[in-house]
Image (cartoon, rainbow, N blue to C red):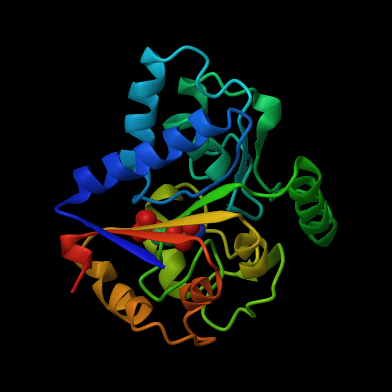
Amino acid sequence: MNWETFPDYDALSEGAARILLDAIRADPKVILGLPTGDTPLGMYSRIVAACSREYRCFRDVVAFNLDEYVGIPRDHPGSYFAFMQRHLFKHVDIDPANTHIPNGMAPDLKVECARYERSIASAGGLGITFLGLGSNGHIAFNEPGTPFDSRTHVVALSESTRKANAAFFLDQPVPTHAITMGIATILDSREIVLLASGAKKRDAIARLRSGTQAGDFPASALGTHSNVRVLVDEAASS
Ligand code: GLP
């Protein structure tokens, strides 16, 4: 794992945006794995600003999001579909047909998980995947205990994750389940960039840095991958 420490969140966001934009310049048809959450917001706003100056920035880019809530319609502001429109997709020239997010409203969720895996594979596999980090070490919605060989699957959300996201669901109960890429799906990406900012990620970052792989700490699976960059700010770094 390659570690890069930035003085603060702004510098980390700038560094992450540069990596993503460089990946598009190197391969305009790059296949991105994209996260939601607070951490990537600064990266997305910088990308939007840069792409408003650049001609045809995302024109041939393909994007697969890591996860989506079950039972939340796409037009609900709490859905990850709505998050991605709000923070990235509606501001850049990406073809909507090239934006993929699991369908949490699918009548058969197992079939939907298999379909999502197939569509990643038939697009050519993930090229570069950006991840946030849960304070318990989760990546995407792979909570502690998720097998490292898991593929896209349905998960029951932990109470702490539901609490953390309650603000988006004032008009209805916080979702209990989500569809997430599995750990093995993420590890198949050719390159992985994990972002962590702020003191609440400090313990998880210290554990990741220790390098010990453990089933109760999903992010430690990244230690088995040969091309991982971890971008942290000083507050997250012990
Ligand atoms: C959620 C998302 C994850 C994200 C994590 C951390 O659980 N499913 O993909 O990495 O939250 O979020 P934040 O960046 O807001 O700390």
